[in-house]
Length: 635
Image (cartoon, rainbow, N blue to C red; front, side, top):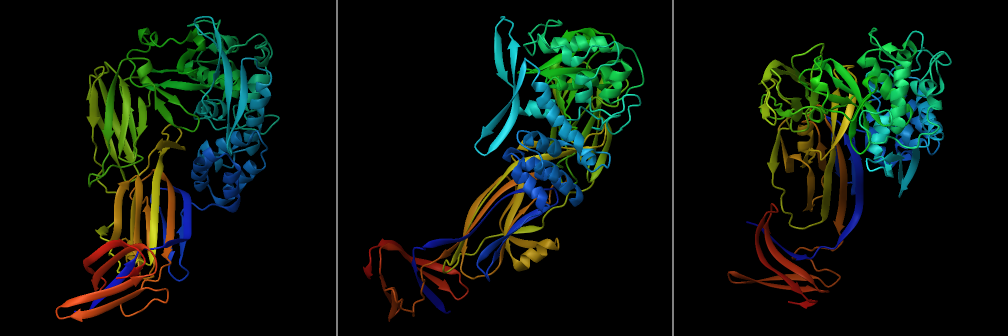
């Protein structure tokens, strides 16, 4: 057997290339960094490359919107990427963040629609600041934070003690529940008050402008109601003496009758008819509140045939102007028309809904794990939950994370709950999941879809130890977020909901195995990780051959991942010599046979760690002779 003996001097690594990226990785996609041995460099191949103007718009916008904007632009045609990127780039400070936010969080079906008038988005932002200038209880504040910036509002609130305090609204509530131009399932458009249909200005109006600056004959003008109002609310339960909240409550009572008419989604048309039951009242209240910079939402209890509102002031607070109910969560279940609440949710403008049942009734919890035929959790599954009641169409809806898990908070003392599952690979039929729900009980349901998710055919292989370390690659990867991609079953438009900590598959492979991987064949992979959040590893090698460092989201069905990547390429600048070669810098290694023994003579020109090891011709390490830290000299 031929044997090679190497004198290894501690490697002196020189950084020769680095790739850093933040990638939005959609379901079914991959990102990889390729080591190109011909030019000793790294090449990044990412699936989320956008039109040049879209990339510029992301760079122009506040950094905290980067992930959401990239996620949204990826769902748009190139033509519309250019359209909305141009809109952002033409927006001046201080409106940039509000404009970029609208585009990041409007459903793609709306942004792609030919009915979407971009001048409405511009008008919406300008109106926020114009209306702010005349209100005394609220002020928009723009905050610059080292290269990024955001806006929110500060309020004055009268406490139960009688003290008036100043509060800053968390930005999340400012953007989603004041700025967002969509309240629930309506299309954000200029609306003709006479017909309720879209129409360009001056016939058509956007609700924020129409409600604040227009009044039908004989009705009060909203903008004139706040001259002596200096607080958001006064912390009074069920009272009109409640600052701006009280004013909007009284204004709603003055402009609306509680009378049934066919329902309509558009606040402009609802106002002009001046009639409606709880549904149009809740829509118009949300619009009027947001017009007056009060963060508000529509609250829905479908199976209990009721809608109302909530506004945010350090917590979500119940609000129903039709009956002057404010901060009263216990009265509803005493109404014969309500009965026992089944499920209650609030509506975010982009279509995401979130459970609020726990604020109004004792609850039980339903935990759901949706799995495929192989037992793997299915991400992005939509679970519709139903219960007795009228008119429907359901009690609530929830969506699964990367693990296939979701949780619903449901009402107690309900005869039954049933559930249906939609996934991108199949459905599960309506099934009874709870009978006679009890307070504080936890119920579980684990439906299995008959189809299977895609699975990488990877065989984990140990990376070989090189006889000489010529190159080193260091890898740091973090799946920082997952983006739950859902479809709202009321309007069938898409939304994106960000949660902390994503999951990806990771591996390294050579060229031949990379081709097998692309062909969906079985392949050998180094450092293979499945469903991991963090990767922090490195490897060294001698032979200059291509390697592929792969981050994959191909095993997910719906949810995207936001991944931070940093890969560094180093080269060993020390000249490692085999035994028969003498270094001009003073390295030498001499082997002298002594019977069945071998005398090893060597020299090093500077202090260093020294390792002498034996390898066979295949490069496999046979043994370590010694590993020492030595001063310069001959040994």
